[in-house]
Image (cartoon, rainbow, N blue to C red; front, side, top):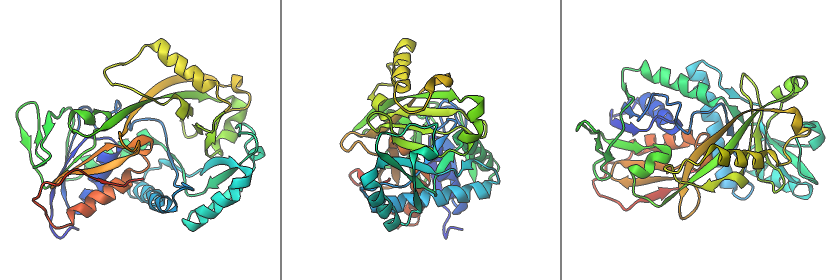
Length: 365
């Protein structure tokens, strides 16, 4: 329980907003969550069948250690909610055979349990020639929509949490953290977090780029169902090592995509179905699966996310004395959401400041 209960406003009920609300409530604070749609919002970028949990970045052992905390946070949340949404099947990345041992050594330095995996162990997945898999055992697949629904139910039952769906915020004052609604109401609190995904540009004046990516959902052949149930997520595959897949299981489909189809976009420009089909065809042309013709395409979806215009990465920005913005979440915003929630709770325990700082970016994996 917090030494002093504070009032927290969370604008945006995607994964970052909802997990922050959970952590703040558990810490003894009073929380109000506002969203432009339902809570959870099926139209949000967080809402999908599955998302990956992984931590290994061989170029940055320190970041790997920080991100490893997310795995433990997801396990704790699953246990608290009493519902299963984390398929701990592991995550594999393909590396040139001559580099695999060094990658495994970096993982060991970061405290990540890994093992090497020969491509022949996953015969239904195509690994680039001359590569070996490095399997992270503390990783896997989050059933994203199940997780969001479970969190929203938990929050709705809390007396210290107020959910305000179907409220499109008009503006947020970065200096005071006041949240202005279209009906002229103003909400106030001790800390405000803006986490509205691609719509953050409407509320926060920071240099950001919007990216759009095409996702393809497949149904494997029946005889491979059991094999796919045991398959980890796989990354760094495809012709340039830019493709990835998340396995089917627990009612989800096989999802494939590639960073090669990630492009800058504008929410006001939807594009045509024909254009999206061409992007999907580019994904399907990647050497991701063995015998790809045996798989049935059941859906094609677009997702959007913001990145920092300067670094191309995610950030958490303090834009006022008590106002924070998780405007740029990058492509890994779902798995790292618990880390943002941790930081916001820590900020509530810091001494109050009435100064108006320049936007201060904090590194978030």
